[in-house]
Image (cartoon, rainbow, N blue to C red):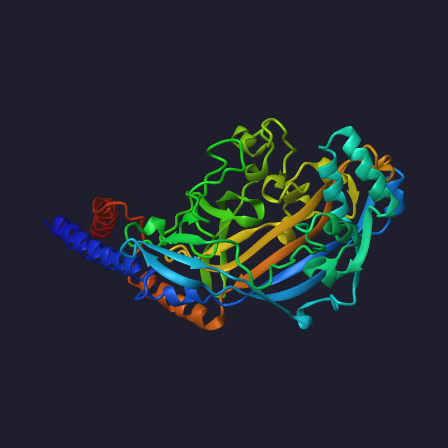
Length: 457
């Protein structure tokens, strides 16, 4: 009788507290104006974006057929502000529309030098892009354009300031083309026209109907799926934008984010438990199969465009969403990539600590406590008929630069988070994933067994 009473009372107590905590989380962790998280979602704290460049030290050797050597320079650090603008609730508050413009402010104390003074030698991206485009033309037309471009003595590598490479400069080749085709922009920069602009129009689920949908992207630029890739699965827009995740995370699930830099969705898997500012968190990171060759992961075949035109493990061609430019993205220093890409260039040293993308998430709330998002930009270099400068080069995927975006919870919200976790833990409330109230039966059984063991002791 005593055991039965113990089980009954414990069941009622635990389920009541679990439901209280669960309901509170569902109410507070939603994208609604009355929730605690809405203001921080609308006006998030700034993050820091570090730019690193691969300075080419032996261009003549590479042009003659040898192996290129690069030296990493950086970081050049910018503080990034991403306020949500034009926030509009849709469909009775179950979805929310927002723009997310970015502004960049240089932070000299976190940088190695002055980007307007420091010089970098890198691939002449406009020249390589135009050569790649001409490669698809007829022999006659390609020959005419090649003769004209060769007469301009454009080199395969360019030397520019870091600021010019990032934020733009008037390119001589593009200027010539602009005079013939006014729609061609005569300026080029990796971040040209990106300061103060947004990545598109997003509609997010608020999480009011289902906490598992909290922050998930419903549409991007009016689309629920992309059209660039060669399979329905590859074209899916899955998960959040990486700034929020649903509450009550467990170690066994896969989390999804839409990575605009990669023009695709990627999944994250649990790696390990970590501690950040006294807060216990789960680290999630992209597993190796995300950029694995279709030979080893057939689900990635849909990212081969045209179908069957696939690269190796660790690299992802994004020409289809970059106006045809021969651009490939990867993790920094070809981390998790085939050794062939790493060995093709001297000066690359991939390692997990410096080059892995990861998110440290407080599992009860899903709040990112710390995050590092890292991505590398590369160019496909090929020999192109009609361009003597390319006749001896070794065809390769050439690294240009990589970015490291970092954000860590501030001290004040970290203290608030520690207090919340302390209250929950010290009331012996263990969170569970709420898919139905009937899950309390499992918890009741666990606590009943605990009471029985105590009675026998």
